[in-house]
Image (cartoon, rainbow, N blue to C red; front, side, top):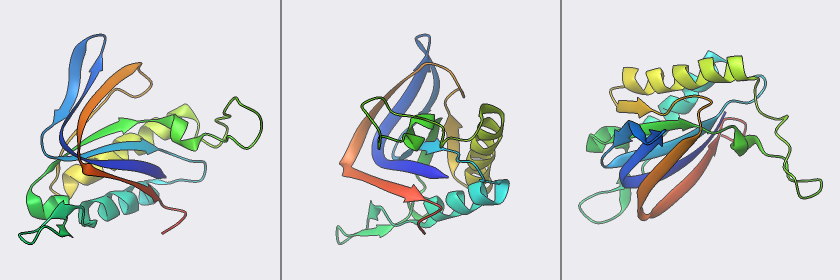
Length: 148
């Protein structure tokens, strides 16, 4: 699985002008399931995300996790993270998992975050979504279960 993670002061996702998910201080996570990913892969990524130290401690160093700060998560499916741009100018998306598998893994990932104690909301899988955020830092990182 791949994830683009942004530390945010706030984020929200809207579908047809209605807010379907939001979070205050925490992590906006755009996530993409890849062929061969399993529920264990999604759980591993959720555990990594819960522990990664992206938040400032008293000394101003990025030394705290979202769990330690009591932050929240907004998880949005984004198959375009699987884009292959190696040929031509039009990205290919055959590196993304098929929609049925991808949705199940996306939902499993979000539930795994909840199970770890992180207040987690989501977008709507497959919908045309408008995502807005205030990136804090800015801090943006890439996580990939293939490159631990």
